[in-house]
Image (cartoon, rainbow, N blue to C red; front, side):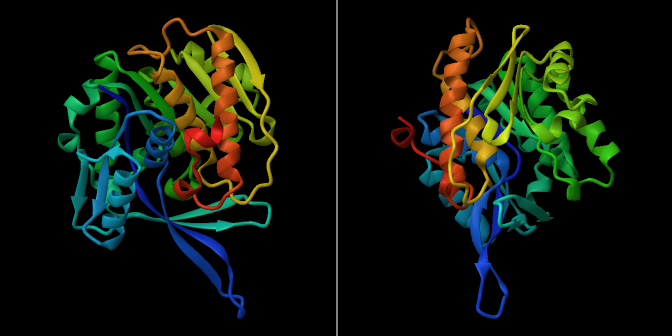
Length: 310
């Protein structure tokens, strides 16, 4: 059995690394894409992971497939397309905060009939994000996969990672980002995304509304303040880890990959019998993993191994 299967985008993060003597921005072609990041983060921390998605028949696509394989991610469900591999241009402010621009390509074209349902049924967890809900066939493929996993009793994890440039309007984003909620067991949001998903900025009230929708475990990352949780009607905050930030790209994905790596280690039903104390230990572990990623540049290249966290 696979511990974790993720579905969605794998892409090239063209990440700004500085400027040359003439002031021209310099970029590194880092592997990325939130669901692929989560698969790699969990794999580096000991989980058996697989990725379902689509790349172009080009050098970037070949590179991304190789990176996933090198990180022990099963790529049997990775499809290829005549369109180019998707790019995300990531500029980094002096504070380490990122801004995104996407050049969409192959990732939009994953169709429902290309989703390996046997892979879904053989996993403890299916994870997806909202980027693959923005356009194209991938929207249908992602919702199909989430619905199928939910019906088969697979734990469904969701990260509604909002990227404004991928949506026509914020109202459209809110509509589509909320559609999968009845299928979701675990949700991870950033503090900026609470209002988009719940119409309130308050973690206590926002998480209560998500719990009322049927989401069993709500996690909200709070930057250097740590992580908030709601589990079985109880809430709490696990403090973060102070670090010198080089680049926040991939930090949230590392956090979630770390959480999922610990949950799947509990057994075939990752949330069954989970205590608050155990959850807080898992979140402390995930906060440490995210802090390591923040201290280094890039997304996948910055993710820690289990030995580094322990």
